[in-house]
Image 1 (cartoon, rainbow, N blue to C red):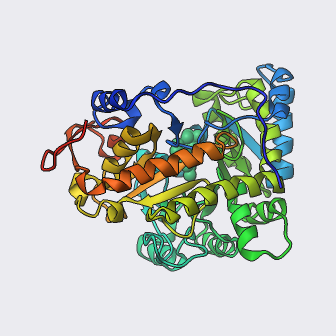
Image 2: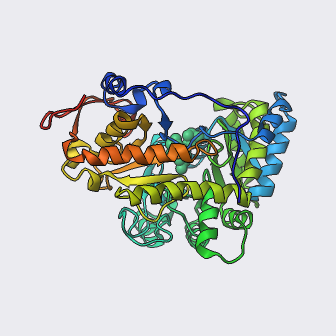
Length: 454
Ligand code: F0G
């Protein structure tokens, strides 16, 4: 069993309720517009928000800031080789920087790129290069009550069908995101990645794994299969199928910023050269790629820590404890529970609020008003025009919060459940020109069909 004790502390204050209501209104009922200092338990994202270990802080001091050929680059390359089996890396400032390097090199006008489900930034990079991102999730992935265990898988039938329709020459890559963040953080099996590998070979396409939560995916597999394989062994086994890996170090790199594109043997030398040239244009010299030497050093340590059994067990255990406590309190929770977040079915919780009144966003607002808890909507506000469930994500930063914080989240939900019928829907009063990113900046207001509590 593993726990963490604090070596440095940060004070967090809970604002009085009336001030929270004021802040919510001033933020245009969009929690992205809040000051973080006004948030008590911040579950907006698990990305770059975790706590580093003492070993990582020690590594920071030894970071080598050389512009070219830094020792810290060599350390990260070595860690990626040992932990992920990756032969070459091109660092980037974070995951989307790595996506820009890779998809800019791979995708051309008119291409089609299937994935188990594209994360927002992946979708945007494929589209920005003229490609069409197509989600091919496993059957049942959008159903919060469908059985698992591998609801994050890519549907090989759908991919095959897409390749037949589009023509293999128009499919440069197949993307598998582990865990599948856009589908409730569901795990992807090793067998599914192996099957995607075969499809990629048949279509002469690259198999890309978005590996930002590779260790959590391996931890979930270990719990499901329970066949004696270690998390580290499962992670390596799964990643070996990829030609290329996109990594946001802000998740299972256990750092606050950073990422890379990784290439597996046999390395495509032309692709590597293109990635390095693009790095020079967009990120930095290919041995630092937008990261400080100290960040490369901390990530080298973080990657190794991410596959420690004690770490992964505690990490996934915390997410599952929160999910179980919420379910016990009567909150409809997406099942099975993934590795980085609890996804709540706001469509069921606020069944009186129709989709066009954004039940997920209404719940997110009330969680802040009730307990200063910040979550994120992943329903009809974030994904306009799709028929996804109205989910709200409670993402747990790594190694940050303690049980008392989780208890507070559960109590907050209980307060919201007590007055669920009075909670109003919302309407958008201002939104940006790009609909795919409207949830980040849109301003809303409660629809006064129901009286608003202040
Ligand atoms: N791929 C996946 C699956 C992600 O979840 C993210 C980020 C990225 C790529 C991009 O990485 O943020 O380092 O540029 N996800 C965060 C989230 C933002 O909240 O889920 P990045």
